[in-house]
Length: 87
Figure (cartoon, rainbow, N blue to C red):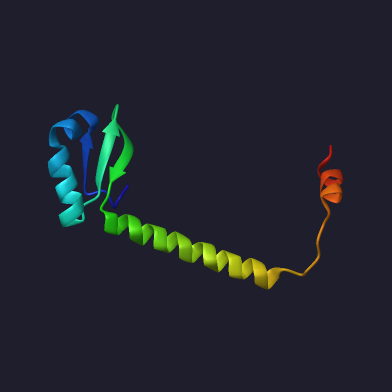
């Protein structure tokens, strides 16, 4: 993952939690947490999380608008849907 500035193991995280949180909060670092040598989680700042959520919301709104623009008004009953999906 290119956006992770450093990785720490879960054992190191236990010993360095305050430092890791400070680096995420104040320096904006994204610190990967590894477990058994594999990336398991990433510690990020609240600002990064809020930006990610805003981005996801913008994507959802854009997808909704696209779906509404493509809606031809045709509807299918539940019975028709079940019949079409039946093997």
